[in-house]
Length: 578
Image (cartoon, rainbow, N blue to C red; front, side):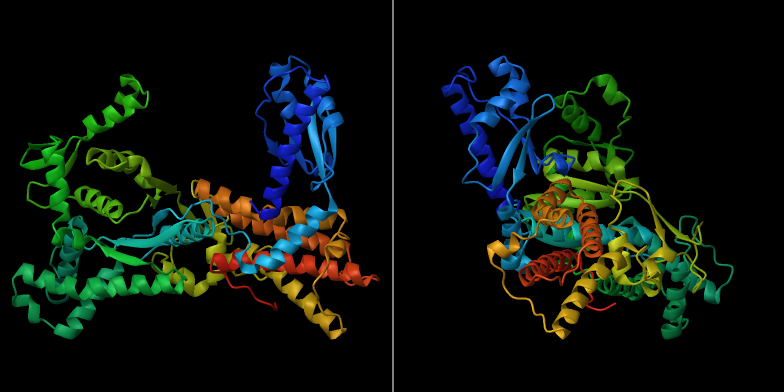
């Protein structure tokens, strides 16, 4: 939490503890151990700025009605040298506390002092976290799911950094294995069809028009030169041409989307370095593999059953999961994607990351337990692998689902979206719904420049504040530093609501980091914009009193600073004019 909020919490907890002790000394309460209690913001600020359940928590200890304990605390509490003005007992024994104007002044002063660093926290204690996200298959264009995963993953990484974690962003490129074999077969078929039209296309091949386009480009360069080559040579040449082009396109799309990765990790590195073989050898040495039908299998059922029984699951509950063993090496001698994935996650932890977070599509939910179990199986802690599952996105326009691009007549790709919708809108709107909820992305709304568009609404609040400063400067009024006494003039309900919300920013950062939910911050800044507009519509910044004008300018400056703080963190632009 913010320095000022933390100071208030510490003071209040100390004051309540001392009030318990004083009440016992004076005989208002019987002698007993002071109970544990919580301090929190009440649902209705009219009931106080902070509330505590201390009296209710003490009912069993003191064997008294909570309302009597609450009154004893009210009669005994000393708030003179704190940021609190008074304490009241309410209801069945609630304790409500009201902050002094000094508290609100200190919040504004703290924001002015820290600027872009306001909201920073040491909550993460500099622990090394990797966030792996998007990791799209390089055999085809990126789609809407990748657009959502990119925004969520990048903004989660940003929130974790703000919360004090040492964060690393990674994209895993599946440039080896079965999908590359399918890619090669598909390219070969499309290439041959140019010269031999009745060439059969593989049943499990990639049907996308991008495969045809790549084969044609290859033919324009090489002609029919590769018709006479062996199939393996031909396929290798096609993949060597097409795969780098696809990967370069993915990297360009991510850059356009304002996502910069610390590393693009290639699956082929795992095979070439022997790390896939190494992890298979480890599992074999532990007796966790067996051969069947010419393939090498991993004892997934055994590992997960042991893990689930240790967690308190019954055998009947486990049986209902219908667990299956997994193939590590196919009968043809090729390792499976699962084998490479185990090696990849082992490599992550070997690089020293305390926790690894993956953003996966919800269709991968069955893979979560398997991968965590595999980490346990090779001697690592599967609980340090966290998975954020992301639901599907429906693209909407005119109230209807959009499946095809009007420009290309093909399936909507990430690049299509970024060509039609501003990146600011795309990144912000994909962070308005939690990952585990299905999302409708409204194309009409995303390109609208009015307050219905959530990013425009927030940006407009920032621009409006910039306009206030420009207009006042034109009138000869320039912001200056305020004294604490001047900042204490901010007493209107709308002003105090704003300051309360500003004070909660660090708490929101920490909560968002703990929950792996960056959408909390999007909601936070949207509410901040709403509270600012409410204040602005109710009160004139330039009023008859110079000191109050300066205090309100300081408040406006604090709101502007925090809005910019959030938008910059999420790589969303922060215009000064709109």
